[in-house]
Image (cartoon, helix red, strand yellow):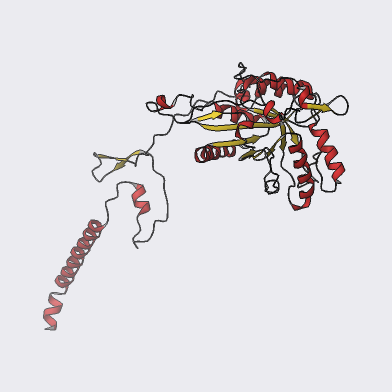
Amino acid sequence: MRDIIEKYDKLITAVLVIVAFVLGIGYWFAEEKSEPVYLSKIDRLMFDKDNKAPKFVLTLPDKFIAKAKDKDKKVFFDSVKPLVENPKKEEDTGFSLEKLLAAVPNLLVLQEQKATQQLEFIDIDEALSEPGKDGKKLPKISDDMRKPWSSYGKSVNIQPNFKKVAIVIAGLGFDPNAINKISDAFDSEVSLSFTPYTPKPYDAIVKGRSMGHETYVDLLLASRDFLKEDTGPLSINLNLSPEEALERFYQTIMQPAPIGGVVIRDGVANENNKMLLTLLLEEAKKRGLLIIDATNENGIDKIEIEGLARRKADIVINKDIKTQAIQSTLQTAENIAFDKGQVLIVADPKPVIVMALYNWIKTFSPQISYEEAKTVEISKPFALVPASNLVVE
């Protein structure tokens, strides 16, 4: 047996080598066939033999060419197309003064228009006033019981299917150019209110009234943060005596031109000054003035004065003056108008606010009759009215 093995030793070795070679070739082909077909280097990079999560995240172009095993054949892959096509970007033409001015809210772009209504009294009606200090007049109820808030205002009629929108631009007075532009550009139904510190109150008030705007004066309260904001010597501070508070109230309403009432600006209005505020509201009622509450508290609203002409603002725009925030606030105003049939907005005269209001008003649907409305779709059935039109005494 040993002789036979030695005789065929070389032959057995050769056979074993051949068998090993054949097995190796077979294993190689089996491994190659079981591996995925890589269409590109990207596929090979992403491949993980252990079936783990990819180690790389790659962003592919919308279309690329991948090589298959057949080098003469090209395979195209399209990425998922977006649901909305990307808008074409405007070419950047660089800096220009026109572009800069267009991006900045500017009252100079307001277009002058004719008055949409006229007031009966442009100047003071002597029957509605009594002498005050320094040649100024204090408003009062006339002997025939006419009141300044209604006599100096104007009632307008709107179509029954439209919602009433009253806007008061308050805090006017320091910038005569702003007074002129706002008075000339806004519809007469928009009301104006002036700070008691207006340098030339007669010119400012008469200008507004000549364009049909109802006119009021701001009543200033103590600031919640008096260290950062000083509301001045006419504000109703917490430490005033009743006599001092009444004197400041007189100085506020003692104007040389007609005012229908006061717009109480935001400030401290709570139990701390309830007694003083009650005194002033009583005096306003006695003189036939309208009270527009533009505070962010309910302190004034809680003071019950029977027979006082009053209205609390639904919307006050005075602090957050970012464009997006203003647009959101105006949408809220629309919702209130739809829900209640009316809305009162009090806004500061900051250019960004004024321009937002101006453009918003332009979106109102033209007034049409109830019969016409049956055949026409009305997207924004809003109609401007003076502030006094939202008051029921």
